[in-house]
Structure formats: structure tokens, C-alpha cells
Length: 282
Image 1 (cartoon, rainbow, N blue to C red):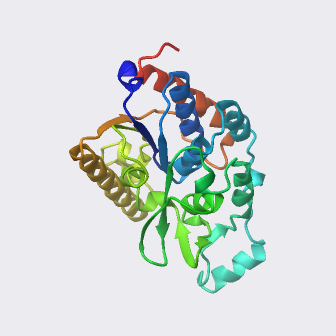
Image 2: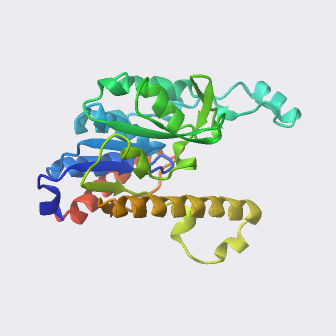
């Protein structure tokens, strides 16, 4: 696989959504570069949009690694005062659109070297879910940080992000891995996908019936199944267009807002697994 990817064939990369999966995505990106693979375009959803923007805007591995490893919960954890949240609860959550304001997240994106898509070194596509128009949106121009924040606005955790009068949430809701989004900005010969599987579709068994709040788990699992099916459909369409799809699914530990300390380990695990998948000595 490594020799094939170092030919003169055009390569595009897609980073899937994956809750706080940016550590694993960054490790994957580092491995690509270590293997001498230089894609010509990037796309991503949610946490994948963050790393796609890092790559397309020209951040090097050292800068990405140093930046992500220093991120703390307090840097983006910005809920309203408890009494304001309590008032929303009393009103049956009327007007409540998300726990975190998202201002901290927006400040974190100030690190991006490019401020707009047009300033990026390589073409970039970022998926987000447009609540106002009830459809997926692929951002390819305009304010880069705003698009990344829109794509990463996890429903109920972050408030929707307003862009040009429309409200947006997590791109992973409508596009787990935006293959078709990438094809809006380039026509590669090969698409490499770093795919972080949703935990609800990793295990195929009925143990969920023993879990608390099983109805919610069923709903959540059905949602993940729908996203997985849509992803498969996009892969099939791309292959019918003559594009080779290479999916690399690393198994780095899951990281969340309260377990950011595990980020460096997830980064390294994804980097090593990717090098192995590429046939590159570690």
C-alpha cells in the first residue's frame, strides 16, 4: 500500500467524526507525513474538521501535537451560570439549545494559520448540519474557524453556531465522513479515510437490553446505524466514479472532555497503527 500511495496518483484525505477524536486524527496525520504521503486536499466532520483544517492550513506536526496536548477542560468549558440553566429547566428547557456557549471553542480555533478557506494551502471541505434549512452543508469558502466550530458543535453539549443567518450543529449528524464533500473541491485518484467507528456499532450483540435507559440507547444506536449506512453509500458512489477508497480504522482509546489526559496516548496509538497499516516501519 505504501508504494502505491507514493506514486504520482492524486490523493485526498477524509477525517470522520468521532467524539473528541482529534487526538487520534492528529496521530494519523503525523503517520501519513512520516510515511512520505502528501495529500492534495482534505475534508472532515466534527473532530475530523478540526484536524482537516490544521492540515489544509499548513500546521506542522510539532505545532499540532504541542497545541492539542496543552488543551484543558477550562479552555472550552463555558456553561451559563447554574441559575440561568435552572431557569431553563423550570421552563421545560424552552429556549435551551446547548450547555456550552462555544466561546471557548472559538478562541481555541484562533490557532489556525489560515483565517479563511481561501487562505488555506490546499483545498478543504468541512461538513456541518444546517438546522435552519434542515440539510447538510459543505463549507468550502469563507471564515474557516467559524466553519470548524459549526462542524464541531455537538448537539446539546454546544449551542448551535450561527453562520449567515443559519444555525449549525455537528457535521457528523448528517455526514460521518464527508466523502462527497471532498469531491466538491477535488477529484482525486485515491481517497484515504481515517475512520473512527461509533461505539454503538462496534459491538454486534443484544447486551444493551440490560443497560439503564435502553430506549435512549436504541435511539442512539439506530442513529449511528443510519450514519454508517450513509457513509457506505458515499463510498460506493466514489468507487463507481473510479476512485480508490482506502479506509484506515485505528483503535485508539476514546477520549472525552473529562479524560483529556488520555489524548497523548490516543495520538500515539493512532500514529503507530497507521504506520503499520501503511506498511511503514515504526
